[in-house]
Image (cartoon, rainbow, N blue to C red; front, side, top):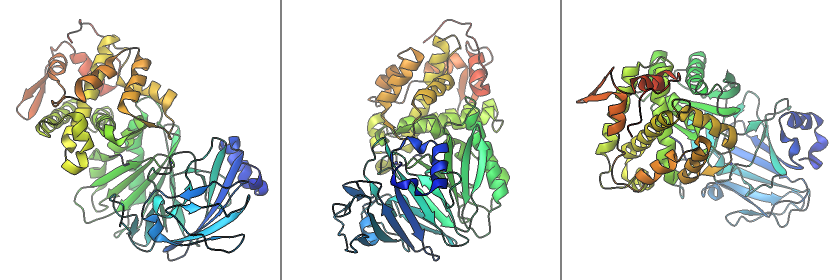
Length: 489
């Protein structure tokens, strides 16, 4: 599930400056410096925000509840208090000046927001939504950035969503240019962040406190394996780095009862796990593959969640087969069962209506599985059109190469137009036009016939003599397959 983020006065720290050059931040001409301090009890965050040259007009926070958690703000130059107005005005702060503020993170606050609590106590550790405590410039220019420097108590580590600055004396991150209202989370605690190399990228894994304790080695192996399935699609992981946060909750039954992706700062995946379950159940579960598969696409706006969830659901099954977690028969059967659930849900609603009212009306099956069906149709039609030289795999590979920037939001229409351009076809826009304003589930009858998918009640048989049985097998194996039959679309 995906939920809905240089360089003059900052040259005092030569080590940090050198690190930022090596990490690509040297293009920024102005780098504001925010020093973030949390107390040993993990109940209050203090921020000292100093500006390189002219301050922005104001600082804003993503959560409406940030103003409630705010304890106080003052101009460091004059010592005078600054009164927030739903934002923090900076008119009184001089060029090169600083302000300081404090935020209470001792308790959950959700007076205004309906997106859940912003504070989570996980044993002795703390997970805090960035939108509750970080007041930041509403928008940064291309040549402007913010360095976030964490001043931590002894024995406390931080897991943050932003791109880290390697070699800094203290944990330091670049804020980057994702919109301020994209959600993100930071964790503080007694964990040790672990770096997992996968597909030419690295994941920064933080496993929070749990009782009983989590076997971090086993969980790291599960994360690496699931991310590896995703990296195998086109030989690399979609983003250079990502935050991975694991929250133990042994009261739940499944190994991974809840997980979600957020994009504020940079891509991040959060897993709530039952650490009492044997590790074999984690490896057999589809959740981690689903969440990492969201990274095949840039951020898709919430009104088009059928697209992002459809990609993730399609590939959780396809990659499960390619990685050996599922047999081909099991993967196709899971897809078939899901299509049945999607057909039974939200009758009378268009896909667009079901998506926009998904959380309110609970139409998850219609949204997820309609998107999955559209992905299957796109994959089959690309392979058929190109004689097997193109597929959904190759289209996503090219999309990641051209348009995988982590700070852009796309509509389904814009993203499908780009995929049409990449594939030199109208396959994606045609599927969009046929399905988003239709109150019927996508028509899979011809795809089933061509691929040899024979429904037997709730089960599925695979015909060996189907016209495109070899393509059905190629989808699940990841191997190319040439077409030898005429199109029957």
